[in-house]
Image (tube, rainbow, N blue to C red; front, side, top):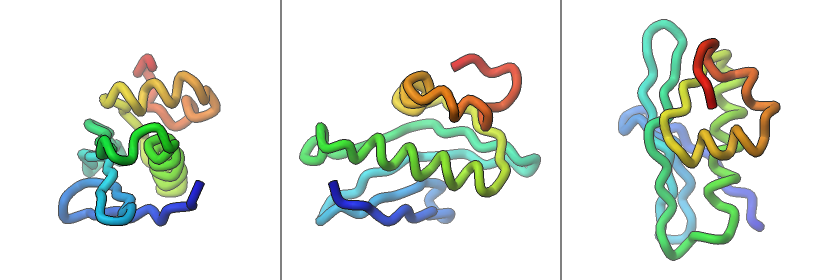
Length: 98
C-alpha cells in the first residue's frame, strides 16, 4: 500500500489524506488544555478495504503522541483501532475507557 502524507488541516479541524481525487479524513476538536477529541473518521466508499483508514488513524495517533496531547477517541473507528492496538492506550486521557 502507498504511504500517504498526513495533513493537519487546522482551519477545518481535521486530519487528511489526499488519495487521487478523494479525501479521507478524521475530524477533531482541540482544547486549550492539551486534549484532542477525534470525533469522526470518513473514508470514501471508493477507497474502502485498502487499509487507508487504518493508516490514517496510525499517523494521527503518532502526531497526537508527538504533540503530547491527551486523546479522547469519540469516533468508533478510532476506538476500535486502539482496541486492536492497545499500545496506543497510553495516549488516551485517563478515565476514558476504550
